[in-house]
Image (cartoon, rainbow, N blue to C red; front, side):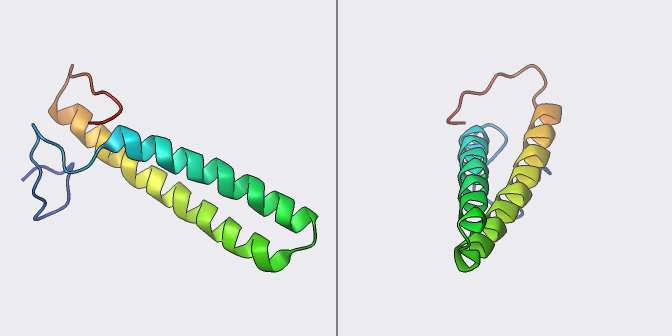
Length: 87
């Protein structure tokens, strides 16, 4: 079992469990969107909306860390391989 994928995952090194590059792009989009919405909500005095947006931004940061660790493990296992956005 490789360390770039979770245990009991159906994917292999040749066929990834999830599209990591696409997940990276979506997590970045979520981080930017939630951060902007949190700042606007706090600026407008809507703390009840700003707090959940800030929490979602923190979740996006954690997801980015997990994705980068899996991409690094994949890069170690497949040195020299190029991956498109959807693999």
